[in-house]
Length: 309
Image (tube, rainbow, N blue to C red; front, side, top):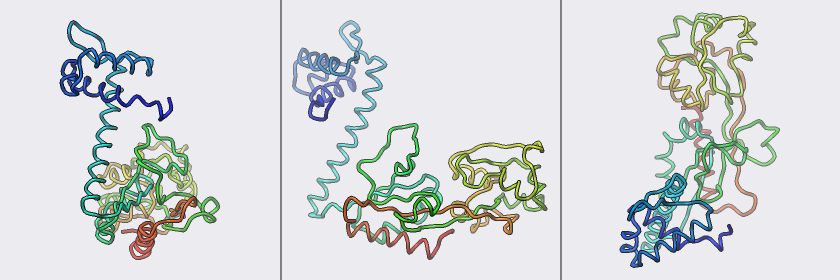
């Protein structure tokens, strides 16, 4: 189905009927006859190739397909109403639309950006900043849900090594991996071997794994019985370590604030290993706006001034 043939009238009638579970109520709301409502629903069902309602006596109920479609339609209508209200409010104030859409990895948004977000908003009060932290489409991450983004990102923060990003992005933050634990566990971790007595929290996409880190200390993970738990993404693993659930091998960029605040301890700082880096990418298809440049500048300045806390 092309956008030009999208049955907007039928969708509007369907939404009203689904919400009220009544063709008569939908007809009254839309100033139509019940037969006109029924006709629009029939046309929409023909376009979609599924039955949306079961006719039960003089009433109607949504089918399973109809209920799923109704949820999607309601969400889309809510977003449309919100967008309309925002544009109308800007028009009433005479303000230009200045939007900066930032796409970034979930754990970086949670662990690094969120506590700095009030300062970013205060520094750029006239900019409508929108954060999409579902995962980077630029890196091809597969998501278990449809991407919730209203437009392509104006800037993207991506994760990788210099070979991948150095020629098309600017360096944002570099990380090292080390062991972190709740402070109460520090006395029990006198050597890396003592880690085998703890629950090791694993994160699937971490650049440095427990297997490689322990191997560098001469410890074969598979020759030793050990308790593990996998938590993704990284900010869940960090929260688990703060709560004493286990020990993590994690990026200092992500765990730095909890470490600085004393909620995590680092028993083996001398055994840290380099990780990868975060990079800022701006679209090459068009010249970045002044607002995008300003937000990029703020991010880079903040990364230099306070990279880990």
